[in-house]
Length: 395
Image 1 (tube, rainbow, N blue to C red):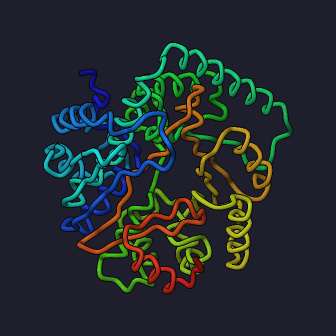
Image 2: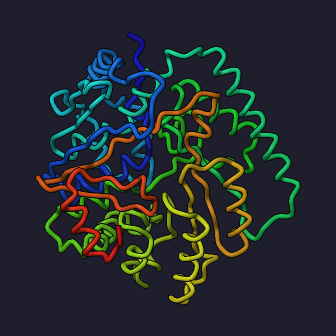
């Protein structure tokens, strides 16, 4: 067996930031995460079952190394007691199962959230790399290097344009859908070397550590979704989640995700208090231009100078789209662009559209009502209808 995951830092930063927040605020929460493939693979993912289980067995043998713990401890927003928890942490195999369901692959992680929430990115990276090992790696990497060079040339050409008020900055968000671990490292290292004026960091904590880059990330949908099942009134779950984040990080990691129940419902809760405390907002579904205009109009209504805030775009971006969005907003506010699949899996093969999402918490369903209908995720249609009713969202 060739282990895919060789370090527990080989994951997104926001897994650690959400993990710490939940460990401190709700350590007894029980959670359930489910794997979903949204597109049609070239061959049945069920064929990967034996290899997936072998990789999960290996994942559950890993521990954080002293140097990795020291790196985390050096991040100012990571607290010492969380690092002490990670020192003794290891994944428990009993909390995750993989099985075949016809041609489909079913993976579920069920147990204490502080033991199950970190499985997500590792599972996605494992399935992706196993899947693409069956293709011609030499041809894919040759195509990938050619496309990467084209991206670099695009950025060099873009550098000749007149500068906007705020700089263009983009980040690698590609762990979960990467072609392989080694290819992501090559891409990130190449971008750091060739276009450092634009490439400013990566969500991959291991690569940030090894390549001396800024680790990027704050919160994902699961953090806000969890609060749908923590005993607060459902209408107030976003307020409770944002307040929990403020209390945990006291001004650090101040980019809020807006689309758990859609941008309009988010802005209804994102009042002057939160708008002043958070540094900016992250887009992950729906029309990005419409979203950005709504965000700027909201700041204007609150009489907040948008030049002091940041809009981060992260929904299926490529560099061309990022530059287009930059041109639309960079004279009015700070921007940032998290690019995933188009950096870490642009090798001429059709990527898998796979996710592993929180579907239940403390015995109750939770849901994501994004601004893109295809991204809505819930296993309980009754709860989904109730959530729409509470937030006045039409189906």
